[in-house]
Length: 270
Image (cartoon, rainbow, N blue to C red):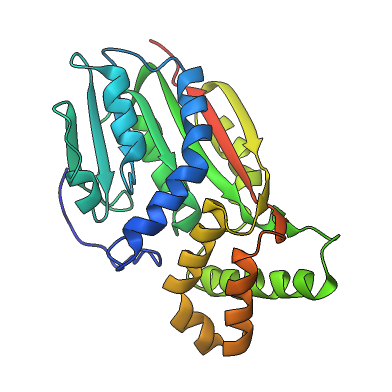
């Protein structure tokens, strides 16, 4: 894998000062769902796995434990310093940009990514790269959010509902302006089922979330990372921003989390 540069800039890059904390919260929320899906595919000793855009590294570490000494895990990221901190003899870390750099072809029993395509300007190219990296008979697992399915609990105080909507809309207005695809989750089945895979299946996971939980902390940190851009947009006043942060910490704050869609497919054998 080469290290050629690209003009693409990930808006929530993990060089930010609180990125490790933010990724910790993301892993606390989504890892149980991801691990459940990986276990359903039968990841086991001896597998060769590719984790694309491995972020904080929790799934790469889990895969290393599952495949054991006879297996191997390659974990990639635009900025892999968190991955490089992992201590596993069967792990190889690569700095890699899937938009411009090739992946090994037909090399892995499993290729997995989470919340990657939703940020990319050329989703089809990235998906084709990952499909080509799967061995015949191997699995692809792609997990992507459907962000516009999130909604506050309408039984809350009307002011809290209005503030929740306004804060969420402001954050995602900034993100969509930087290329975020808020509706990818609902298109994921079509993308995977037309990519030349068989045994395709897609499921979604969503829960009711409360203020003060790891999910709320994750979104607060995401907002903190985008603070300057949100303020420059004029979509929230400074007082509204602080009120929104307070709301995220309040145990009575309730909202239906956006749906995380997980699509799996096997590359035909032979």
